[in-house]
Length: 449
Ligand SMILES: Nc1nc2c(c(=O)[nH]1)N[C@H]1C(S)=C(S)[C@@H](COP(=O)(O)O)O[C@H]1N2
Ligand SMILES: [Mo]
Image (tube, rainbow, N blue to C red; front, top):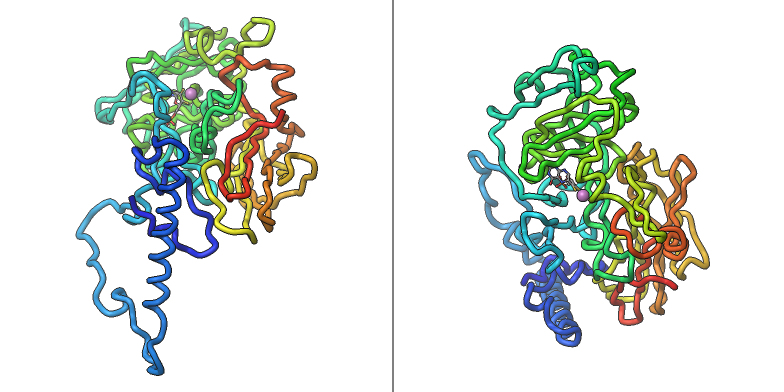
């Protein structure tokens, strides 16, 4: 355990995951609090020592300089790939213990509470695999484009990665959110931190070839072929239908780039589909085939999974767009406010239907709302960072955010959502999130009834 990274006075301590070991986290609540207090004490002592070192000694106006001012630093490496500071080692993507029975069909969550701005560092991008991940040799990888019959497409083609990467490319910032993000919260409060409640969400600059351009090259008949099927190369047989009207917007990408470099293996190296605004499952990784057809394919991942169970027992299919949503990441569940006084409430907002127009924040459980400031850039189907200054008076506070997108859609409360959707869904939960700041400063996940 290393608490010395969180010694900045007045700064909100990070979530317990970043302060305590796995064993300490698993301890009963009373013991956990004792560990936390110990971590804070260690942090404060380290801070006091740091301040003492920097103070002038006696009447001599000579500063005692820290080691970094007195000697040569580390040499540049002859070559190498940079890593975060060792003091940031606790900021990790994490599995939710016990959530899935195997680690191949599983998920690891992005640590939203520790991120700034809107871009997710590639090494902290959430991961969702149905059958484990692969590091595929790009020289052997192929993408086939075909039609469901010869009328749909004139020239079926097979591309190597080199051939694809010779074509003109575009780069665009977009969020990706798993349709099951926040899914555990449908019934009641299920998880303690924003990492586990909202961490199947990430945002990157993606680079790739526009699918529409490749379909043009192949002579696709877009009057007849109103759908495409995307297929992945891994053992999950991941296949999803994408309506041609989305492809025609020109921003569905055959993507190989993520944040300026090639995709990471966990995120689909060497090729994945990027479908802005649509739930993560349609962003097929290890993409090996696109088929043009004249009707939805009703694959297992669109009629058994990723359907919404409604209160009347019917399943709703093809609800693929991720609706307007937001969450406060500071303060959020598991964090601790060390003292009353000033804080900058900060969080993320996004919508699969366009830009974020406005975010309102409440600190009293939704009785009063104040409009938050949106941080530029505010981009189409991309994460938007918002913030609002707040002085905490030390009393319990219920912190919430409510986003509105450019189509006028507004996030609903849990009561409103459950009135329509019931409690038995897994997917597509974009309800307003509430965090309770307790008098002790500890922040808890709660739902208002
Ligand atoms: N080939 C393949 N593509 C896939 C998956 C998969 O298991 N195999 N999982 C899907 C799901 S459900 C999601 S939410 C996203 C997750 O993308 P990420 O792992 O890059 O975050 O990939 C989608 N594409
Ligand atoms: Mo997903």
